[in-house]
Length: 132
Image (cartoon, rainbow, N blue to C red):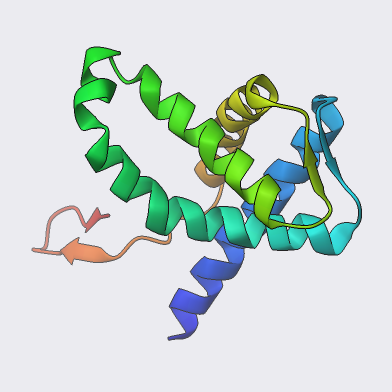
């Protein structure tokens, strides 16, 4: 249970950091205070974990036709939804959400690259250990 809690807290911290940096880089995204930033990161993580996979499956034909570009549109829509749900999170429009979504994905990937592996050992047969 402790490992799951620490993974959750690490991902929440990365999402919070990503949103905070994005608010300094993009003029169209603002947080009224620290709590709105932290709540936005929490809600965005929840929306990305629950709602986004369902929408990706439902829009799979469109995503395939656009060679995956529609997934970027879904990212923007998830950010816009969170901005509507969380008081104190201001977003100027779709294109801001679009580029913030790309930034958050790349920034989070960059940060997680430098973290130690949190993976689970799948196979250890005396040879190299395989992590997921």
